Every structure is written in structure tokens, then in C-alpha cells.
Amino acid sequence: MARLNAAAPGDAERMLLDCCASGRWARRLADHRPYRDLGTLLAAADEAAYDLRPTDLDEALAGECAQPLPPTNGGPAAHTALSAAHAEYERLFGHAFVISLDGIDPEEHANHVLAGIRSRLGNNVEEERNIAAAELRALARARLTALVHADA
Image (cartoon, rainbow, N blue to C red; front, side):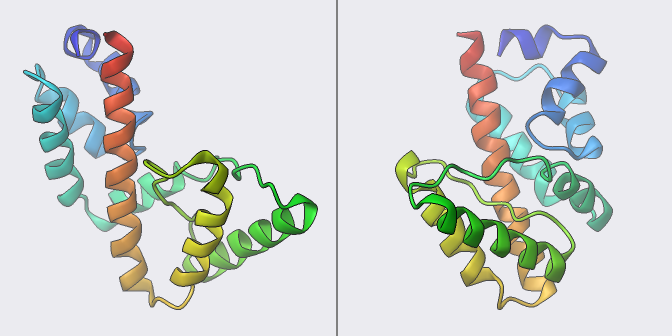
């Protein structure tokens, strides 16, 4: 927490952009420093995430495009299925699939991602944007927690 609170505004923003790629979200959190503790930071992050405009959400989702596919234990066929599911999702919704894997056994990441994509392919665009926004909030919370714990 000390490093984030003490960072110059631009440096704090860059740290926060690694947690959620919305510039508006990162600026808002950087502008409201210092944070007393992790709980206060996470509450502020949630509030800022709920206030994202559609263009801010688009920006945050675009920042997730570089996420690598999780390793699979199912060999090439499983990797092909995962790649095809990702491609179909991006074709339908116009952005990368996002899902929080916090609390999921790493051995199950690929299966969880594939099941998540398949279950969400039937959503309409509005439903999926709401789910993706919730997943981004969860990802941001996990990344902020890691950022703060890296200071400890």
C-alpha cells in the first residue's frame, strides 16, 4: 500500500492500469489516494468500476486482449477447442473473453475457461457486457490485492 500511496500521480496511474486498463478508473483511484488499507482501496475500486461508462468498459476490455490462454492438460485437442471458443466469443462480442480464475485450482483453469466461454456464448450483448464488467471487477480486485501484498 505504501508504494501506491507514495507514488507520483503518473506512476500510480501506471500501476493501477496494470490492474484494470480503463484510464478513467486508474485516474480516479490515483486521485483519491492515500488509501488507509486494502479494504478501502478495494471499495474505491469497486465504486470506480461501477461508474465506468461504456467507452471506459470498452477500453478496459481491450486491455485484456493480451491475456494468454491457460495451459491445458488435454493436449493439442483441448488447446484447439479453447482457441476456437475464444475466437467465437470475440467474433460474437467484439472483445476478449474475461473471467476471474481466483480460487480455481490451476489444474482446472483451462476447463473452467472453456466451460465459461461455452456458457456465455448464448448471452445477448447487454447480458454479456454486464458479466464481463463483473469479471473485470473481480480481476481488478485480485490484481490490486497482489499489488498491495507485493509491498508487504
